Length: 182
Image 1 (cartoon, rainbow, N blue to C red):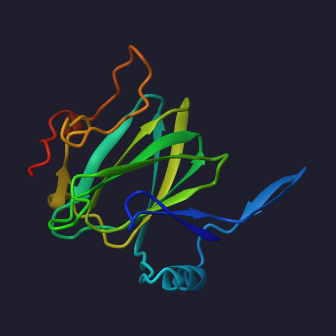
Image 2 (image 1 turned 90 degrees about the horizontal axis):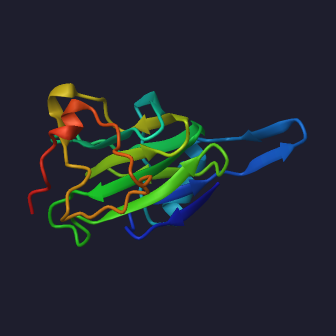
C-alpha cells in the first residue's frame, strides 16, 4: 500500500497494490501492521478502527456534510461498486486549514481509499448509477452526537461535480443543515 498526501496534510489517500489478470483481481484493503508502518513512516499515528459501515446510494445522491460533535470519528472510505466524489472539510478549531475542503473521486475502478481524520465533516456525491461505499470508523456512531454542515455553504465553496440542470438528492437533515460558523 502507498500513502498519498492531499491539499490538507492530515487527509490521506491510500493506494493498495492490485494484483490482476484475466480472471479478475485481488487487493488487500486493510492490514493493521501495514497501516502502522505507513503512518509511522509519515510521522503519524495509525488510526484504530472500531466499526465498519456500508451504504448504497443512487446517482445524484449527495450525503453530507456529516460529523460527530464530541466523539469525532476518523474514517477510511472506499468504494466497492460505482463512483463517488468524496469530500472532507476541516472543522478543527485553531487548525490552519479550518473550513477548507479536499475532494477526491473514489471508484471501484481506481481502488483508492481516503483516510479522513477525526475533526472533519464528510460527504459524497454519487456519480454512477449507484455506488456501494464501505467505511471504517475510529469511534462508534452516536446519533445524538451527529452534526451537519450545509453541503452548499458558500464560505466553504465545495466544487461539487454536479450534472448541469440536476439538483442533488438530499435527506431532510442535509436539506436543513446549518452553515459553518466561523
